[in-house]
Amino acid sequence: MNIDCYAAQEAKAPLEKFSYASRNLRPWDVEVKISHCGICHSDTHLVDNDWGISQYPLVPGHEIVGNVSAMGSSVKHLKAGQRVGIGWQCSACMVCEWCISGRENLCPEIGATCLGNHGGFAKSIVVDSRFAFILPNGMDSENAAPLLCGGITVFAPLIHFNIRPTMKVGVIGVGGLGHLALQFYRAWGCEVTAFSATPGKEKEAIDFGAHRILNSKDPDVLKANAATQDFIISTVPADLDWEAYLNVLRPEGQLCVVGVPQSALSIPAFPLIASRKRVCGSPIGGRSDIETMLAFAARHGIKAQTESFGMDEVNPAMDRVRNNQARYRVVLKN
Image (spheres, helix red, strand yellow):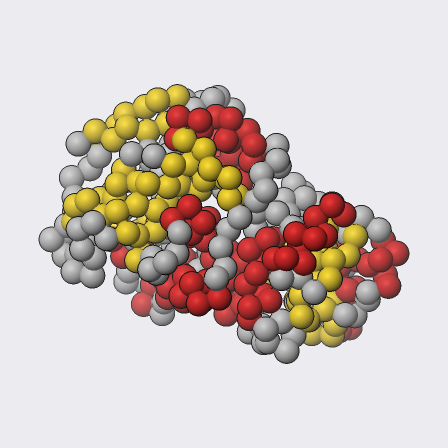
């Protein structure tokens, strides 16, 4: 079967119509007819080869929602026509220590949906069915699509870094990731502070769940809030004054980086030693994490704020994400 899609033929090139022959279904495979696919900042980085790992032709897209159209012989947990979501990961070895402990996202043989494989800017896709997640009833497909990458990226630290409802949590950036983090962390029970360089986002940040918003461009504001946060998550792809944010942490606080800065982190050792602070990072979550995230989002009404474009409008949609104009996630529709 040939799959119609949109692909970049080289770095920084516009996406063009493309078609490729899909593999025959393996026992655990599922074919999904795509209805929606979110555009993540990672998609623009892959198309532009900003990370030096892209392979062309490249079909982006890893925030996929669609309906099961065919299944391999071993697939028992899904049914034809069922609505599912697919995120960054499309396969794993399923036998290593990470897979058998429910941390498939750390598998050394992780398969990425749109890196080394053709992704979701397409009519359909074939992936390992164990990475196709049933979406809760009542969850709108357009608003759910970004949860499959952006949502789990900010949700997983809640689980793996032992964030408790009594904690004070800071979110750097009110954007594609940040607006989801504000919702998740408020629903988790935390006292949430948004750090933003865009004062015009104050009302939206509060609406998303922030208890307050601070001007991240003002060093005096950061100094005035020293030792106030138990956990800070940086969702922005920018170089920051990391020492200033370490000082905003309380003793034993954690600074978690999920947005990829342009430069290597420059971290002073003394705050880490003197106050037992930690700097960490986090990718997506394992399958159990994603299932938990989807159930939590459905229960608390957490959803991405989206702008929709037709799949044939992929290039202006990509430019909107690339130029940081989206409020707050862009989703393509077939």
